[in-house]
Structures are given as C-alpha cells and as structure tokens.
Amino acid sequence: MEAPLYPAFPLQPPTPSGAQAFWVGPRYLAGDDRQLYETVADVLTRLGWTNLTIVRGRQEPDEAPQDRQVLRSTVLHISPDTLRWAQWVLADEPFLLGELPIAWQISARTDSSSPLAEWSAYFTPDVPGEAVADLLVALGNRDQPTVPLAHPELVLDAVTAHGWLRDVDQPRAAAMDPTFTTRLSLGEVPPLIQDGDPHSLTLAAHETGPPGWQAWAEPALGSPYLWAVSFSAGVPHDLVAAFAASLSSTAPVLRHVLPESTKDRLLRAPAD
View 1 (tube, helix red, strand yellow):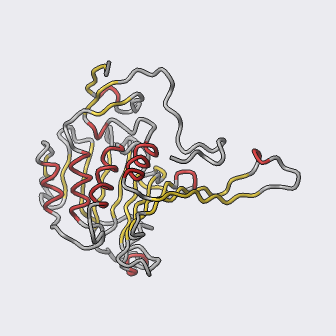
View 2: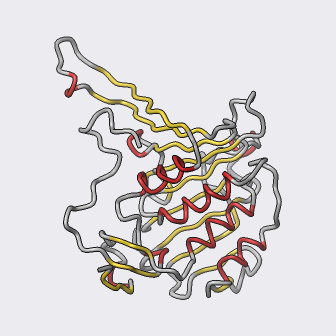
C-alpha cells in the first residue's frame, strides 16, 4: 500500500494504539474500525489492481513543501483489464450521500476504449469494509463486469437468508434487519449518481429514472445515518447480492473502534 504523499492530509484517521480488540456483531452496525481505506485497498492489491495517487494543489513562492495547499487528492485503483476501478475520494471534497461524505466510488465499463462508466457504486465512511471487499472480490471474478446475470430477487434472498425481513409494503423491493435500523431498497436513485444511461443525469423534476439499490443504517428514527450506500441502476444484481450477503452476515467482525451511535447495540467479546 502506498504511503500518503502529504501526511497532513491522512487517508483515514488512525486506529488508536493500544485499543482493545473485540469480536462484535451485528456487522451492519459495527462501523469500519477507521480502516475503510486499508481494508479495501489490501483486497485490491491482492486482486492485482494497480494504484496511483493524483494530487492537485497550490504552492506559493518560497512556501515550504509541507505547507502546500492540497486541493484535490484521489487514490485510484485500476484492474489489470482496465474495465473496473475504485477511487478513494474522501479527501477530495466528495458530494454527500445521506448527509455523509462519499469515501469509495467503484465503477466499471464494458469497453476499455470508452472513458465512461456503465455503472458506479458509492460508499460512505463506517460501511463495514468486509462488505465492500466481498463486492470487489465478486467484481474481480467476473469476465464482463457490466453484464446483468441475475434478478433483483437474488439481493433480497441474500439478506433474508440471514434473518432480515422483507418490507410488508414492498416485499419484492426492500428488506430490513430485525432491529429495523438498517434497510436495503430498490428504488429511486439519489442525484449525481453516475450510470451508463445518460438520461439518468438529465431527468426533469417530475421524472423518475431506472431504479437502483440503496442501503443505509439509521441507529434511531430521525437520527443521523451511520453509513449510506448507493448503487446506480446499472450495477448487476449479483454484485449487489455479494455486498448484501456480507453486510447481513451473522459472523462477527474484529473491531478496535466502535461507532458511538451503535456501540450499545453491539454484542462484543474480547478478541484476546
């Protein structure tokens, strides 16, 4: 993994040294352990993806290098076939999703000659890194990253197999965890979500584009989201299912740092 070019702008806050480790559950409320970049980047390295850091900034005359003003810093990971890529954009003033900044953006295209993504997926901080990693492994195992291979039902089956409940009003399009804090829904896509269908970016106020999967965790009704995820309409359902299956998994995850908003809801056991 590359070292940050400018330590004053860390990729992600470090995990406190000496913090006690716990096995915790449920996974969807466990946060990212302040290691979302490292968790995902390690998987991309194992998959053989190339990474580079793009930095744009401003430096005044006679200004020391460490005082340089970084205006844009994006870590880009590209697959060997260049058909898929992942960007760490948290330091790049990303747009908000559920009032939270985007941390990772994952995209894919059909043809390497086209600069445009056929679909994109967006993840804010505190999304469990294990779920993003499992999505990327599934993406890496695909020969054609944009071809649909499954129906939406596969996504709902992935979470209901782990005890989640289908929405009574939308049994074929939404499900939630047993504590009603986390939801997965196929519906309207938020603004600015990039998709291969150009019409999705030019919709009128009264128009609704093709549906995409959205997921979020709301620890208490009306409280700020813990995390949010948006899949554009073109993301193949089997890839969303890989994310959903990992997100809803009942297997505990290792954590040193627990989210303040959900730590009282987590089951935990000392890792040592």
